[in-house]
Every structure is written in structure tokens, then in C-alpha cells.
Image 1: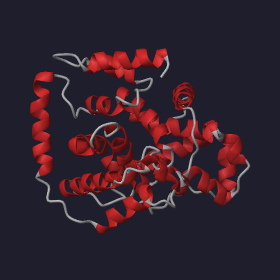
Image 2 (image 1 turned 30 degrees about the vertical axis):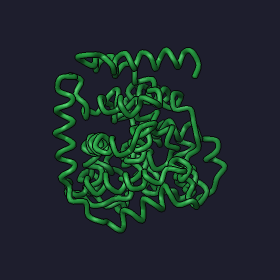
Image 3 (image 1 turned 90 degrees about the vertical axis):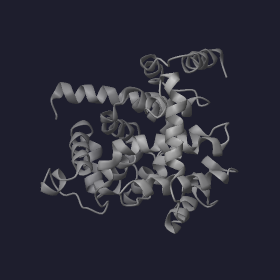
Image 4 (image 1 turned 180 degrees about the vertical axis):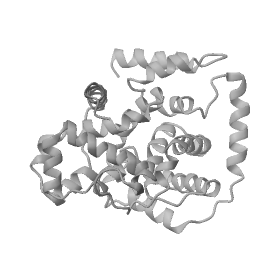
Length: 309
């Protein structure tokens, strides 16, 4: 850790260790540019309103949440167990390295997801595993899993409450043309339509190339929107991106982040064919997320200036 990183972590610790009250405004401002990995899980709890900034209420709130969580009658859901293993713990998969050597986290995935479905009337979606993974990785870092299962659950639930409308449709729905009745009825497809329109305006050559290769939006954009890129990006990149989302409470930036990612990989994508493009867009490489986020803000400013919405 260099001196600058050490000073940054010290600033975060001073805010988190305040005796009576965590200054949430300062914490948000500091978090927008990235959170030290060792503190990310704890900071996310405040940004997602899982932990109370008032230290006098914090213990009471946590006890209430944990009592509610522990009341869940956890059923064995075979499909969830199988897909968790196949996604992050099967040695044949690309994402295994994120949780290598930590088999206890597999059980944590299972318990948190089963609790979530016990309390929420939503259809199961494999994407929930991807959305949960950054919380598991960040919150349990350097700490015992058993002590923080509740915190992971309520952090995950806080984000899912924002994403909930995106999971109320079938991912197999087709997208054709401009905004039509079926799209208007679905928040996800409205956002996908918006993304496609802005893609056409901001990167016409790449958009035209996708059309020539017959790359449909459902083959990449739908998952990019629904899972906040958690299924496609390496976990450390997802965590950095979510620092900004949680700190600014600005998920509306996400479509512009998607455009920024496409722009960043423009040259590579233009050299690929259909099957290669689909694979690449589902397995994005490491990238500088500070640059991606900065460019997303620039794209949003351009769209506003050109009145493309």
C-alpha cells in the first residue's frame, strides 16, 4: 500500500470510527472515487442504509435485522445450489478464481439467496448469484463469514429493492424496432431501448456493425442492464463501479457506463465475428473503471447537450 492509499484508508476509518455519528455526506463524497478494499463491505452497508449512521441506534437496528433473518426457514433449493457451484466454485469455470480456496462462501451464497426468496415473491433468476457475489467478496473480506451473513443479506436486499422491477419479466422476451407496447410495459426493455437508441447516436459505426452481424440486444444488453454488469465484469471491476453507484445513489448512470464500455472496446469488437462478439460481451476483460466512469459522465453530458433523449 502506497502513502496515498494509506492516507485514503485513514480518512475512511476516521469517518467509520466516529463515536456518535457517521457523516454520511462525507462518506458518500469520499466513496465516489473508490473505496479501499479492506473497508468496502462496511462502507457499502452505510451507503445502502443497512447500517444506521447514528451509533446509538446501530446495535438495536442490527439486532432487529438479524432476528428477522434468523427466523427464515431455509429450504434446500437444488437449483440454486447447483447454479452457485457451477458459477463460482466449479474448477472448470472462468469465475472460480474469485472464490478459490474459500468453500465456506458457497454455503453463504445458498443461505442468503434462500432467505431472499423466502421473503420476496419474485421468480428465481440465475442473475441473482452474480448480483450477490460482490457483497460476499467485499463484506466477508478478512472477517469470519458466520458473523456477517446478516449484513450481506440486508446489503443485497437493499440493492435488489432498486433492481426489483428489472426482474419482473422473462429474459426471453424479444426486442424488435422502436418503443412498442410490450416494451413500455417493462422497465428493463424500456432501458434497453434507450440504450440501443443512444448506442446508435454515439457509436453509429459499431452499432451498424452489430446489425450486420445480427447481434440482438437480448444477447448482451438485457443482462448488462439487469445485473449492473456483475455477470460480465471481473469482480474487482464490479466492486469499483458499484462504489460510485452506491455513493452517488445514481443507477441512472448505468446505461452510460454500458456505452462507455462499448466505446472502450470499440476497435476489438469491430474485428470480431458474431459468436466471438457474443462471448466477448459476456466475459469482459479487466479495465480501468475510473476511466470508464469518467467517460460515462462525458457521454451523458453529450447526450444532454445534443438532446438525444
